[in-house]
Image (cartoon, rainbow, N blue to C red; front, side, top):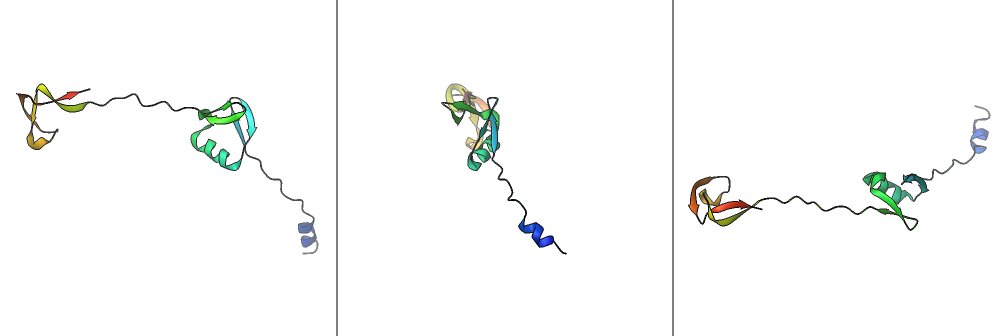
Length: 97
């Protein structure tokens, strides 16, 4: 194997890969930690504000679930189990929003 070790010593240094992210149609060089965070959430969740990459604000959930509450007229529950209504009574439980 003549020349093998000489070729290894004359080999150029590998180039470092700089992570890049495309935000709002522009390409930015970012740190490795920020690149991982952007890849985790997706590039569409980030925007550029004052020449800094920031995450867009998340909207809050608007769904409301019905609650079981005592009302004027409602259902009587077997052993206080909401899945077993027995009869309709005055002052029983009803589903409200």
